[in-house]
Length: 446
Ligand code: ADP
Image (cartoon, rainbow, N blue to C red; front, top):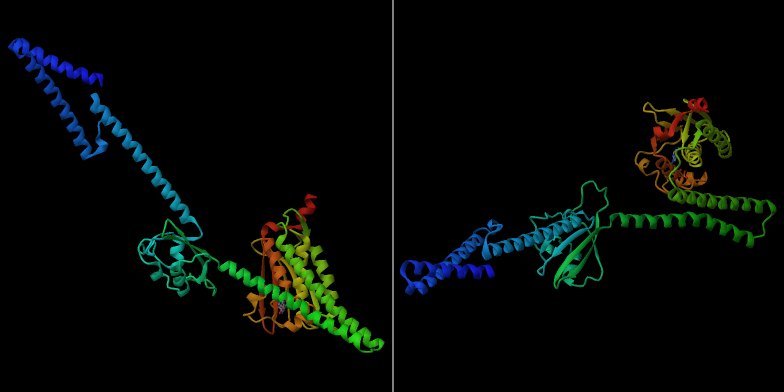
């Protein structure tokens, strides 16, 4: 500022001095006024230039100029740069927020005061079958026409959620409709945020849990009813020693059945909670097969008079890694099924072999009744039985194959089932390459 005053005074003095030198003393004041006027004119021109630049393109402001106008230009430029930076930063933040909401597995829809879509993420768009760009500003109730949802949206009572079938069902959802739980949360006056959640899996799990509890109760109630009946008979009827012992034998059978069921249930729950099977614990297949054979011969003698024609083939001397108790249980389970479902005199062939790709396969082939194709995919479901009475007669719980499948999966393997009605079945437990090694290699190393 002192510089400005100084230049102004200098211009007046120069004007005065010039007039004095040329026209004499009497024109000195006029010269001084003219000098001051000239300074003001130049100053106004500079201000005008700055204004012109600002009108056209603020980014073209001079970075540094002389005097107060240059200073002013510089400050304006700095302020603008800061403001631009702030806008860019908040824009970036907004984009990040939107990207985060986009990534959410839940659907998010922002609805304005009139019930029109202001913004929605891709999840909500997919669930509703709408286009997140094209359908902006559309009334949500016109696009999602489920009566329960429309009534909910209009009620302005959002203390609970509303559950509907998703308006857009993805292809190949295997017969279960996608179920959506939707809840509105009002914000900023009359605006609303709608959150949607796919609860299909949750509902299915709940149905499965309910079915499972019902099945377990049913399975336990049946032998319990029989037991209670026998107890009552023993209490109320005078029975001779032979009859008494017959009843007691039947009662023992029922309690054994309940025990087997509880054991299988415990096995399943243990499998679900257990740590993954170890990879460093190797068991010779030969030992596992020997145990299977012992059990199978005993079972065959126990349930049939003729017995079965049992053969055990081991095409390769191998060792397998994993939880040996689980592997033994899976192998025995498949074999005991073959014996239980194959009538006496039938043939059961157990084979261990290496597949061409290096995986190991334990298979049990029988000449039993076989299973119709429509039942095969369901055999590993808990309590699913094709022949209920045959299963019960032979002490089945309906959980055996569910346990085998679980064990196979825990070991990274699979359970393969092939069967032809009237001819027989083949159940195979296939273990991955990493869990199989030749037994010879071990003895060499040892
Ligand atoms: P269960 O205790 O009833 O045998 P599983 O889970 O072991 O239960 O088997 C499920 C059903 O699969 C059995 O009830 C039976 O109908 C069928 N199944 C299993 N193995 C055989 C087999 N080898 N031959 C014919 N049917 C079989």
